Image 1 (cartoon, rainbow, N blue to C red):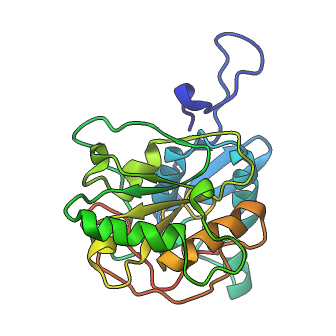
Image 2 (tube, rainbow, N blue to C red):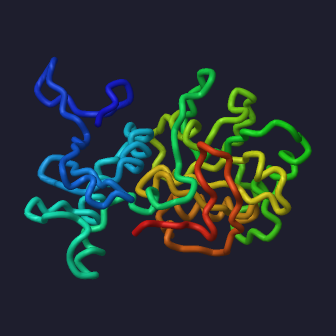
Length: 274
């Protein structure tokens, strides 16, 4: 697994030598748990289990800086013991330790799936946090979303989150799925940018309260959650400086159906397989 054109893989010894970021295989153990079909994966001295869907979602952000730290976490969460007969055997504690990374994605009713867009989408430089509009049927609804995101009415610390968040209002992204938008990210060198992509789709702009779809682009790729517009600025600011992680939930969210082929909204934020 390597993306040559976007920092994927490493070239340690000169021309013609390519070291993949992650080597993913399949063997007789893959089909034994048919609901998740885990794949043995290798990176340097680390070995781990990863599900096909999570491997695909990780590929979309393989060019992300510091992704090696994410792979280190994968090796901790889903280590591969080459002496085990299968991953679906053992006591409960052992199963929790050896759970394949991404098992949650494989069990969802509407799992995420990347499909090639009908037209080429522009690249998105994530040198700051992004809120990307993907529905263009109601400009008034978009304006009504931007205002509380930028200037939350009850913020005690920051009056205007505009300098920390770029609002992408480009019709080229009309109808794009979360996975298609995620694949267009190009990561900058800013240290205080959160590991979350924000999307305003048709459901966001037509739902009372306009909850924003949040798409993690680090460990939790493929899972999504909702956040109220007034909470967006505080969330990205705290995620960016490491004051909180995605396991911290300030408010519940309402589950909504998603179109086929796009990521599902999760009830509460975030939903994690860990």
